[in-house]
Length: 159
Image 1 (tube, rainbow, N blue to C red):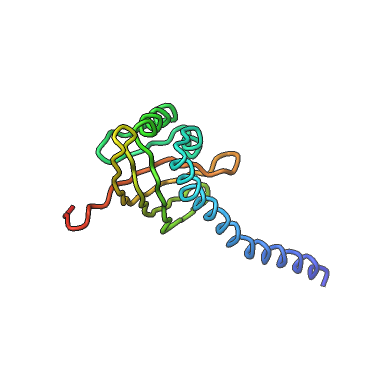
Image 2: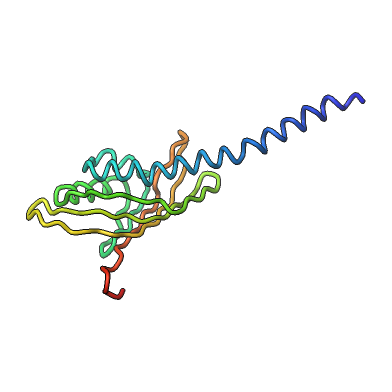
C-alpha cells in the first residue's frame, strides 16, 4: 500500500511522456516542413541571399543538377549570389513527405513555377523534384545539410 502513490505518480509520468511524444514529433515535422517549403520559397522568390543561406548548416552540401557539388557556407552564398544576379524565380514548393528521427530528418517534394532571365527577360516554366536531409542545430532550429534536386522532363520528352 505504501508504494501505491509512487506507482500512480510513475504511471502518470509515463502516460504524459507517451502523450507528448507524438506532439513533439509532429512539432519537429512541422518545423522541417516550414523550413523546406515556406522559408525556402520566400527566400528564393525574394532573391534574398542572406535568408537563403540561413536555411543551410555551415557544413551543408548542395547537389544542383548538371553542376558540381557546392560545399560549405561560403560556396553556397556565392552560388546563390550568382543565380540571383542572373534569374528571377517565382516558385512554389509542395512538401510531399517529412520524416524526423531524433536530430536528423529528411523531406521530399516538388517545385513548380517560372524562372526569368534578368538579361533577356525570357521566361521558362520549371518543374522539379527535390530531396533534402536536415539536422537539428544546438539552438533547436533545423537546417538543411544536403540538398539535391533535378528538373522533371518536359511533357512528351523521355528522360
